[in-house]
Amino acid sequence: MTATADAPTTVAGAPRARQHRTMRKLVLGVAGILGFLATWQLLPTLGIVNPAYFPTATETILQLFVLFGDLEFWRNVGRTLTSWALGLLISTVLAVVLGTIIGLVPFLRRATHTTVEFLRPIPSVALIPLAILMFGYQLQAALLIIVYAGFWQVFIQVLYGVADVDAVARDTARSFGLSRGSRIVNLVFPTALPYLMTGLRLAATVALILAITAEMFISIPGLGRAIMLARESGQWTTVYALVIVTGMLGLLVNLIFRAIERRSLSWHQSVRGEEVL
Amino acid sequence: MTLYTSTVVTPRRPSRVWAKFGENTAYALGLPIILLVIWGVWSSISPAPFFPSPLVIAEAFIETWVGPAFFADVLPSLGRLAIGIVLAVGLGIAAGIVIGLVQWLRELLEPVFEFFRAVPPPVLIPIVAVLVGANDLMKVVVIVAGAIWPVLLNTIEGVRATDSVMTETARSFAVTSGERLRYLVLPSASPRIMTGVRQCLSIALILMVISEMFFSSSGLGYRIVYFQRNYLIAEMWSGIVLLGLIGVLLAVIFGFVERRVLRWYHGIKEVERA
Image (cartoon, rainbow over all chains, first blue to last red; front, top):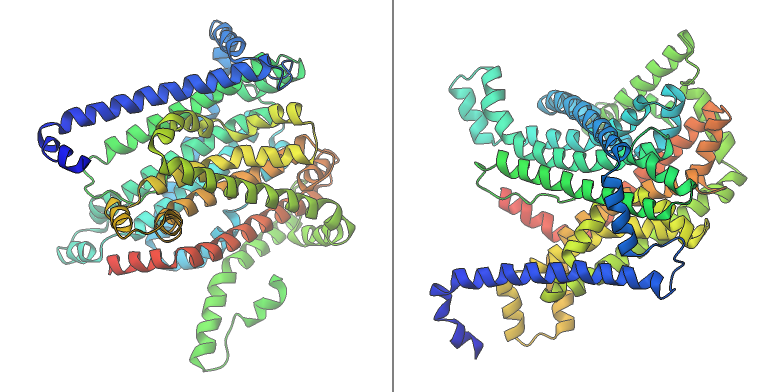
């Protein structure tokens, strides 16, 4: 019965219906966030959890603004983002070079398969003790862990992407006598680009997680160490505020890399069934 | 393990099956053996203190992990990991189906969940440790709290993307909601759910290791850090190798389950590609 009422309006009322839907989504989303904050506020106030270790939402948000006025806080954000960016850069360059070479040569693909399948699942945090031994409590130790984790994300995607070249397109390029260099630039690169972008986005998220983990547990200056220091001195409001900051950074990194992905693939017609982290 | 299989590498028999088998084995084990040999030779020519030879590590591996340590440290760690993963996957799928099916609930909760997913999971460890205490429960809670988000959000997304024509068809054929869930919603969401589960596994393993490394007095992660602090280098390496083996084991189990669950899906993909 609603179908008969809706049917005539679908053509003329489509934009308004869509507007209505986005509006509704926005309102509900904001309501969800407010509801979450209200629950958070009530839990310690009503004494359901210990307020000493679980500060209220208002206290935490106030502390967040105190942090925003603190220069040391921004330095820590800078340090974390520096090790993140360095790690991401190194792992991406390594993965693209190795992934392209190995992906293009069938012999190498086959010969490296088991090695890759064994090395890839090793959790990079298992390497923390080794990193401490090799580099001490320094940035290099964090970089080793970040690069190890980020590398596989990009490498696997590039490996698949390079091998995904359309057979007809490849044969066409061959019969038109394109040189090897020109084939790589005009055929392999565009094919592998969507894969590379997916890998890059996954690696960016993973690199941030490991940058903060390394700071927490190898005590390298940055947001992670700030969390551990605040914990040791019992400043739980600061701990919660910093956790929120790391979440915001994660959200920001995800949004930026999603935007880059969409931008660089605006020419790409098909929507691939990509993995979303 | 690698020592006796290396004899199979060169096939003698003219039989095609054996030739094929030999070739595959050579490809599978060739590079790992070459790398191990290079490492072994290199470590005996110029001994680096932090890179003992593979033979020393293998010896330390057997000495350290075969015996009582396996029951005292490895099994409890694996148990906590398994409980954490089962809870994260179970809760994630159950909540994800409910939230994915109810539109207003989804729109209400999705922004909050997106934020939770963006929080790097290890920062939850200090908070959970102080709220729950440094015990077994804490480690399971940490694993669930960190690893549930990829499963939950992927399930929501998968359930939401159920083909609307099929839903309408099922409805007009008066398929009960239980059957609809079993034969339509779950299968169509399963590729996304499996993607979420794969990410969940690697996050869970990371959280198991870290929570034991720094907030525990037993378990695999604790052992590795203990060896490192006491400069028992070969033992530390053997722990890293063991973690690698656990990672590989998880990947193999996941691959097996995924092939079972998504057989129909891979079949469709192959047909589309052909």
